[in-house]
Picture (cartoon, rainbow, N blue to C red):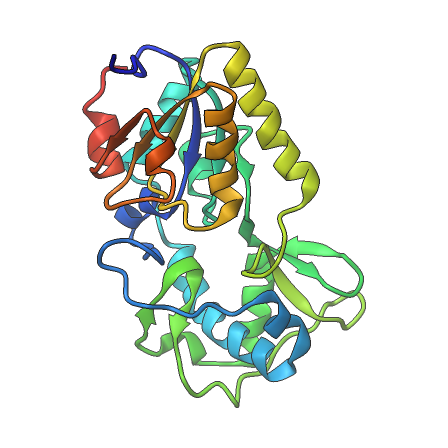
Length: 263
């Protein structure tokens, strides 16, 4: 019997495939080149690694901040306003769901438009840091680069880049995102599990959009949903690690699938 997911409420989990139509590359799509992202341990343990990261991310932010929500982001925001969404969890760090009008979004991996000091905990806006880095490194953002996922770009020579310290304590600044090798805050994870419990009690479905579910931070919610009897629908180009748990898998683009459904 086919799962009647279109007429039920959705708990939505989104991944990078939702933002590719906004010009933001993903790590694991069918056409994505191999990438080796910087780990949390590298970032905190090495000043040259932090310089390399910020030199590339400074250029990448010029492109990321110009990205606009696409049809998938707008469709989900409309459906939320109409009451179809029970909740929205995103693995993306681009903030495009919020810019499209979605509210209450759980940013599982954080947000690139925020910066946190590793030493004093002060948080600040990315645009403020971007202006400081621009002043310290004139002309840096004008170079032609290849865009990579999560606001990164490909730049090999970063030795001359000047990193800006925290204005409060002169400490180490990091984007307020979860790096590879870093753990998602427990309270944030619990909020997601609470939504799955609610989906179970309200006979909603977990709708996974544009995620290969290669990392456990997202896959665990699919596993919990399947364990709790919540219907699982996956829309993604290519296989995912959750395909064997899904009640329905659609090998298709997210925007084209959502916009073809009635509202």
